[in-house]
Image (cartoon, rainbow, N blue to C red; front, side, top):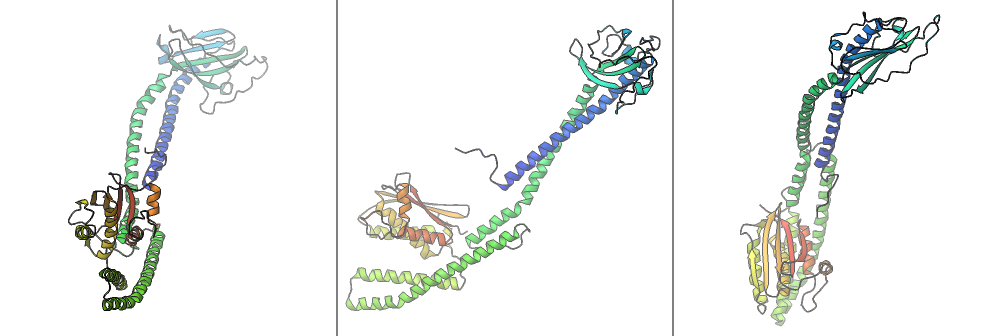
Length: 470
């Protein structure tokens, strides 16, 4: 079951998620900010219309806190009966309203100020920093406008502006009320195209981010291709022409490649020295066996040792001259080894099913390939009951050769133990326990790998992965 990851593994995915979240938050902030600015702008227009009505009513308030109806002129919106535009004046002399047929909503005026003495000068209220105060009895310094929202009995939202006017009899509260839809309707009409524009902007930014990441991370993909070429043997180093951020990494990779190559050359030189040291004694031993008429099996084993020594000497010479990897076809090598095994194990007839493309080749020395496949085929032939299956396929620059038998197989702990040098799990056979370890070592030296597992028939399957040669 695939576990959900909050943070993607790839750099592309992480950067894309971060860019998407940042863009989304920025667009959300822009939408909220713009809507707030638009609301304040539209609300200011409504406030100005209400303030104009409040200014007219403030001039109509007499010193005795009554309302002069002849001066209380209704502006156009307030003069329509049954509309949501209304006003009221409330003070010590009673309550006066616009006289519209629609009942006024309940308004909670600010706490009235105590009436000052006749000969006292009324205190100046705090001015409204946002709006100029309309003139009225007592001068602008006697007025302070307050905004508020309420609902009528039908549930419609209303917006009000309230001002207190100081008179000798006490404070008079003047309130002008207008429909809130004056603000909400234009705001809604403006937000629909605004949100659409922000959505299109978000899509454009997402596409730009995607293109930017694809272009910006392309050097990483090129680096992976270059490393694959080094692994396949077509290139010796990763190209140095890299972006500044990758240049130190490429330098270290090339240094590591050179170090590994030097270590491998040093190890092979030791093998070559050892093989060269054994060559002369083996030649003398072979002549001695021929003179004494030794058994053919003994002479055959000495010849096998001599061939191995010559093989490693040839590899050492090829490495010393800088020889490139050769192209070795798999199908002919497997067929030749099967013919040999049928003669060696003539007492154990095994049915072999082979599925290997005729043109499939690997970048491996032919003798190394014969040694690896021969060890695996011999191991499978020894433990198979009646059938052996061989298949090969290429993918991602590698060739995987599978050799499966229908024997008893091995469990996980036994599989790990079977890969150890000199470890024999079947004491009945005449092997020495080095075949699998030698095969794995040769595969890793050539940039491949060896893995063991259970075959579909319950036996053992060996998967040998080697670099593909086009």
